[in-house]
Amino acid sequence: MADFDKPSSTEEEYFAREEIEKKRKLALQQAEEMAAQRREELKQLHHMKCPKCGMDLQTLTRGKVELDTCFNCHGVWLDAGELDQIVSQGPEGGGKVMGAVLNLFKRK
Image (cartoon, rainbow, N blue to C red; front, side, top):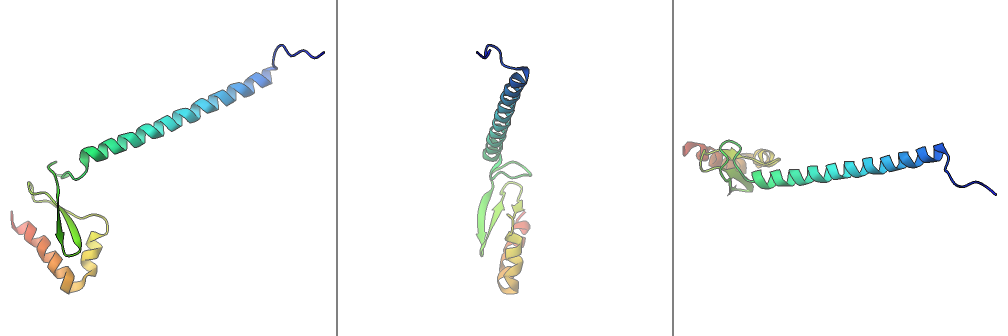
């Protein structure tokens, strides 16, 4: 009969490495989940807040472009691609939007 009382040392090492790898993957997964949760918390905290003064931003529609505007410090922010939209509208459409943007700065 074969002796099955004690596993070999290589077998013990294999299972120990497997256990360590499982724990490492679990730790990485937990770190990713915590990072995603933290990003979401920061987004909720800073979404639509003025980067200059921290007050709420208001969305104003000028032509086909939505401008994020702070009525406290009179800052105006464009999202990705909105400046290209203003420029691509040409002198007839873009001029009106750009004029509206410039008027926001004159109201100080």
